Length: 533
Image 1 (tube, one colour):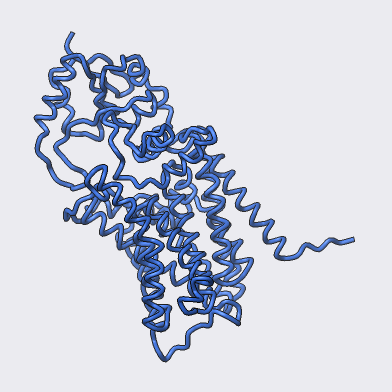
Image 2 (cartoon, helix red, strand yellow; image 1 turned 180 degrees about the vertical axis):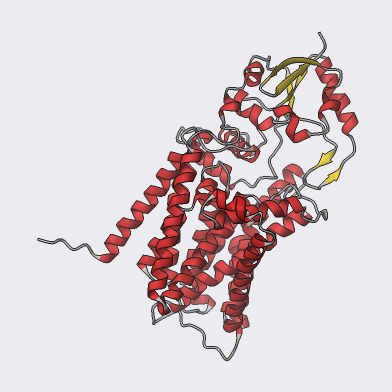
């Protein structure tokens, strides 16, 4: 007797397996815990501070001030997990592993509604789980996985909102308007996870004005969206203004993007597009090849999105009906909003780098939301190709899955060998950290790596005086006075100075900082200075 499994059930079971595989891959790639950076420690320390009932504070610093630079979403999620007894350092690993699987599931649902096709949903989920770069994003204790999850939830609810026919404000409150409010709330939560959530809100507002047919519907829908989004944004800004007299701890200063930052971004895109690291090294050496490829991709996205918007706005073009023939409106809404978000997000990070925070770089984590949307548009393009050239679409899909699986296998193997960043053995086996753990609690620690000191000693550290503001990309006064004050504390026996990794991140200032101090300990490129005996 042959048992036939319904197609929907088979697809659902397959999706569950893909999601479980995604969760397993993150855990497999991080046997020593997630990769850790300065920002990672800030989120973890903030979560511990919340759990301790002290509010959202900079517990990794001796000053222990209120956090305003990092929005609270990720730390709040870690603190919630901590309520069940799991320290945020460990909780981050399980949260991001689960999010990798959940994000794959959300992409599958979004693809099914966009095409619609159960196979397309499974293909997009598989491409996501098999993407080595997006695995790396989830294998680091950062806020991007949660931001992607919330953004995808907002996409889904926006799609559900446009699936239903527009109604009057009276009937709408009990009908499709709830989907728009849910979309706005997820966008607000995304903003509280990363300030780039503002680009997400901008994309939805633009989409509303493009997709709605009358000015009354446009302003009504936009007003309801803002009513759901602004409380999250303004509430956080109000809190920051009260505790720190600054809404976001950022100020306007013009600083054009440096060439080395652009080069970094191009290399990240090359790594995302090319299956082997050796190929990336070869390709980046070819003059203007990566620049041309990236320009071609973004140019195509911009032209496609602008063309779609023009068709929607044109009175001569019939609008797709959101009812009747298979949710045609919902399918076009998903791909359109993905294109809009790429444009809005890229514009937002360029604006941030040039006007608010020069320290932000085109790193993988920063660009990861763009990569997720590019995967959405890729599957949409393959589905369009399938309508005309089925065999070519199938071959292309198999090729993409095969290449992705190959790259993913090497990524997992590489990451599983040792911890990344502060999770590396060079930190947890550091003799300098062992020395610091023996210090009396009343001895302060000045260091160029306060996050690492907090992680391995449990103590907040003091940042070093500096003559350069990396966020504003400009020299600042007071360096000499700061050094004199620091050295006075050290010479009085109330503090020590620790320089890790030979001061690689404070090049040019090490000699001035250490002049006249006693070198009490040196090992593995780390030095500890105390007062003269």
